[in-house]
Image (cartoon, rainbow, N blue to C red; front, side, top):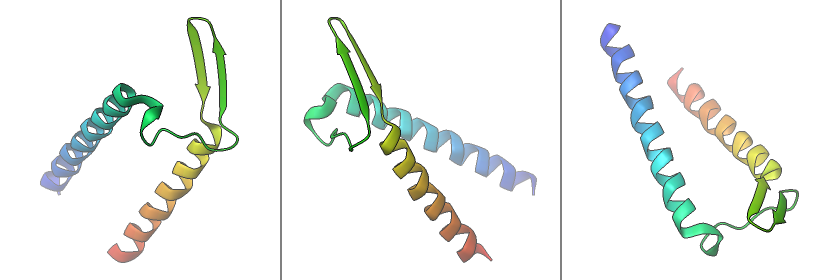
Length: 77
């Protein structure tokens, strides 16, 4: 059981590093490639300042992750 907890922790750290790496990559590339906004995402642009509130994108990602984890939990039973 102790080894399982260690491996799960290492897996979560690795997943976090992958997500950070993808975020940095998408931040460097910007909205030119695959950075399209969904309807409902809010963008406020002022000189020297841009605020992006991806409300719809966050909801869609939340639903997709919930579905993924539900499927994983169902297959583990």
